[in-house]
Length: 410
Image 1: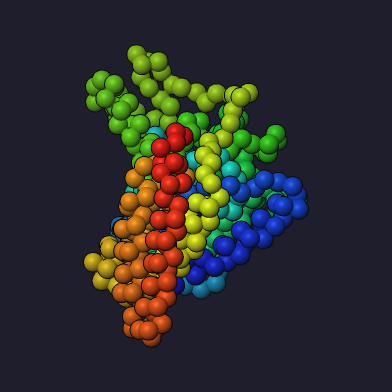
Image 2 (image 1 turned 30 degrees about the horizontal axis):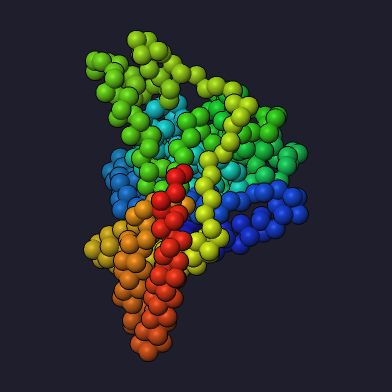
């Protein structure tokens, strides 16, 4: 059973998002767009299911260092946990800051900044590759002798804290602004305005930004997103787009030295013969958010399917330790396939309709595999039969509409 605080808190995420939607409605704030919100959650889902495999890298190596090379054995109690939590946030600050200041590392973090909205769903927009570029920043804690289980708990609480600060509902918070990371401070961090870029990297505390010179007060309202918008709802492409750009730019760079400089200098760096550093520009007067519009009947279909997939994902993550590697891999691929499939509707892709029929059938078979020993067979088969029939009937009924959308341009 997966007792990660992040997994356990999944129902609370959606309750808080519902409360935020209500608050935004009272404030007459547009707040959420269904294509953006689902893409945010899709990135989080993809991050969680791929994390099932990558935790071996991060926690495994940390544990080896702790067991073989720790200088001390720090006892686990309330006071040492408070110390660990503070030191963890210090390590997080540097991991986060370097994820902004090193081009290669930015490829693992840019996912989180690529939404052009700012609401609680953005907190779930996490990368599937960031672990590769940040896990070693926490190794000093292993050398000091902090237990891996304590580290997992500190990491989970730190991440949970950062969920609620992704909102425009809450303004400035007075005295807390002096030492805690708040919605106001974090809105700055997500701004693509030149004065806001690479500021306020702290997770729970804002103290480190003030100590190390990366603090910026929220002044004018930020414009959210990244300087080169990804312009896609596909969570897989969102995860690899920066790396794809790097690959193309690396082809133009001559010599090993400049290629290494390109990898480890700030995002935007190029050698002088290619124009030099490309500094962030002021927001264009005619700037418009990326958006696509599809008929509401398509959105309702996605929402219906999405709720079911989220239930499967939650069940999978909660029970993940009980599955073999083949099952983990198969279910992970199905979940990732589903998140990509939904982007096909939002982006009006021609491949959406035929592959969705196959996906519905595979999804039904997967649910049957998981629940056949838990739910009575007649109830399970009738429920899955109804789901499959309703889904395929919907696709058939709206085939002409789907075809029309598929041939439309973005």
